[in-house]
Length: 160
Image 1 (cartoon, rainbow, N blue to C red):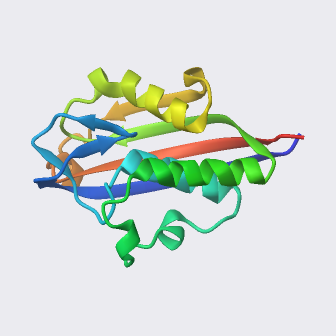
Image 2 (cartoon, rainbow, N blue to C red; image 1 turned 180 degrees about the vertical axis):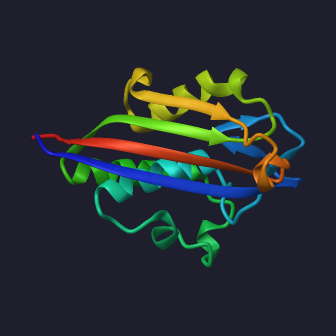
């Protein structure tokens, strides 16, 4: 059985006047993530983990932030693209493990909805998605409430 593993990471600054979208879910908060797209750090990290496991270019190369067509882009489409690459290369997702690092807002009330959103996009069982949220204990830009980051691992299994 052939197995591939990928890791993805993303971080974006928080800004007033933006929607906070994590894992394809809009979260009620007075700030959102600043970026060329919708800046969904969770989906960006997962997408890079999937593409990395396949040895493919990262999302910044496929969806460049220098192009008008990616402005305010819905990151769910990025994850759909990464998932399609997994399928085209005859792999299936064994599991995804995700950590969201945010000082605020409190994310535990949103984790089930985020898991359901990711599972629906990837067409996998929610039980195959590990999802945790943590703070940065007041350290750095994340700890100061200036940014949110996410780390994701993906394990792919050959679908033969």
